[in-house]
Length: 391
Image 1 (tube, one colour):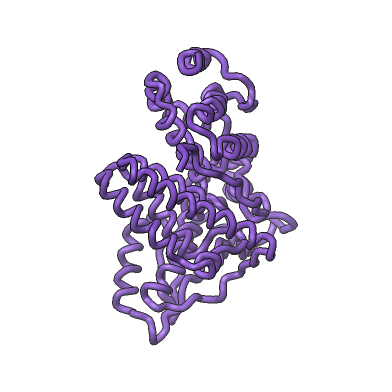
Image 2: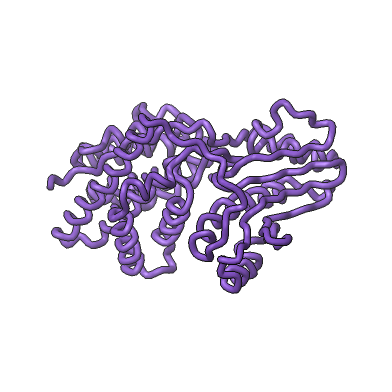
């Protein structure tokens, strides 16, 4: 196998992924400080997803029902209260009730902080309610995000582990035949690349790079906006595990290798059963801006400088590949940044590290300089690193 970089194909676009609109945040904070509590609440919702209030009479009580992946989120706003409810699971006779209720009690302590899961007759519900005067924008955002994240994440997992039933069939839209073919081709390509590169690193005894190819492979799949269900939950779990510095590095590699082997052994039918379009109340990624991307690039600077000074193109290329993918995983980046990352990862696919590093660095320095025209030449102090590396 030649020493070239893994391949990358940008995911298909999804029309269901909400966009954070930053301009509404200041309006929400100003309204709350002026004690215009309902206005603050409405502007907070606009910040998270302007589509939620489209064509609605905001002067009367509001009832919003919207899907979040496989979950259903219900938002109620009156003149004096705000509530979020999410019907979660049906507890049937076949459910492992003791284990299920023990897990629910555990989740109510952590990770939940504002919402709680309640049992009403035979149904488990996520819920949080507060007076409208207490709807400080940060609190509203955290409460809604908490319900959306965990209602969507836990339903598939608890059905599988504890034999509970879905409250209702998830409201999803299947991919078209052409989309299915394209997506499967991409996922299969990622898994094939993983197997080839993992074997290559094993033969070379480059054990540390097993972490890189595991992390890159997982991020490529989980960043596809139409990957949902148990598959997405497991991928997210391993993103967190692989990046968790409190876990022994070799243990992370072993666990990640076992997960990737199981994923590679899954059939096309098994994998594609968790691939579909689904509605969302809010993006589960954090807001972004030119400044935020610049700050993230500054966090990478120490390692980038080290690899540049050492002329270590191989480490540099793998570091920037997974760092860019991790940026897309964490942040709802602006289109210009997303396209810049997609462009450069496609451009370096199959290139040797010495050639690929120039393109990756060009994009990185564009982010570091706060320059949205990332295809232009790097400027300022960045030029010194280019001349040192490339002469």
